[in-house]
Amino acid sequence: MACGTNAIKTCLCILSVFFWTCAVTLIVIGSIILAEYGNISELAQSTEILAPSMILIGAGVFLFIVGLLGCVGALKGNKLVLTVFFLLMLVVLVGEVVAVAFGYYYREQVGTKLNTKFHEMIKDCKNDSSDASCSEIDFIQEKFECCGADTYEDWFMSTENYSIPQSCCRENNCTTPERGTNETIANEVIFTRGCSAKAIDLIEDYFTWIFVATIIVVILQVLGLIGTCVMLCRSRETPYSNLDSQGYRV
Image (tube, one colour):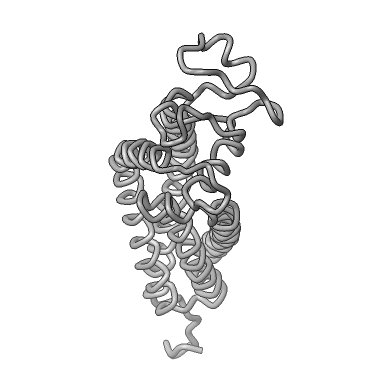
């Protein structure tokens, strides 16, 4: 009996360490996203693409607290702490399922919003370094090696008389193609793929990894819930005691 309980305690402690690792990872990833893409404020506000980074940081802090409770509850065998740990794990489990389902549904809407906003920003861009829209577009095009919303020809509809910005160039100070240029020829000097397609591909890749990671975490959480239930049930059992010759507990 004691051997089984100790094994469960060890497993819960390992699970808690796993929670801490996940917590630190989520906080770091969320912080990197904010630091890396925090300067695209106009695009972020209209499409809420930076909202997941805030969610990641919040989830990381929450998971750290859950892991701490699990470790303390397992080592001390405290029923109250174990109960709180059990309930919080249930909340995390339900939250993960809802988040994945919501993310799967919302990812297409994000792609549509990004495409619409890209077109608006390109149309209004004045090719001026002081223009916030142009600065954000330049950052995105250089970062992801793309040009325009759907294609580089989107710039032909801008207010700059069919001018393609330098951020679309594969090399500095390239000669940008004119309207009607064959895409094969244009591809030699500029990025011809649209930024919306690049962004959607990135979202799809991230979602695939998040889905796989969620499945692994859910399995571990279910095992943790079972282990916590076993510990709570065993803590209610009255342990065996030695009796003296008259039948009283020693």
